[in-house]
Amino acid sequence: MPIVNISILEGRDDAAKARLIAEVTDAVEHSIGASREAIRVLINEIPASHWGTAGVPKSQNNQNKK
Image 1 (cartoon, rainbow, N blue to C red):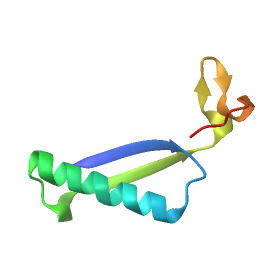
Image 2 (tube, one colour):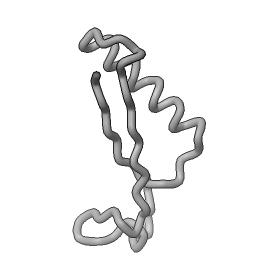
Image 3 (cartoon, one colour):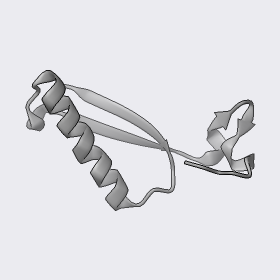
Image 4 (cartoon, rainbow, N blue to C red):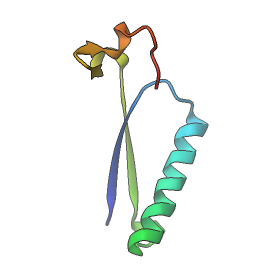
């Protein structure tokens, strides 16, 4: 049973996360031949204050890009 863990910054809407799950499932199915029913996709949403880049929390970054 393939399990895919994805960490992203919080804030995306449910529709975007549903597309991500669908497309990752497609990629796993096509790349390793796993059955769709066996594929698990887990999304971990990380608060910007818990995501650091170049020594600075994303919440303190003026750009706040996702």
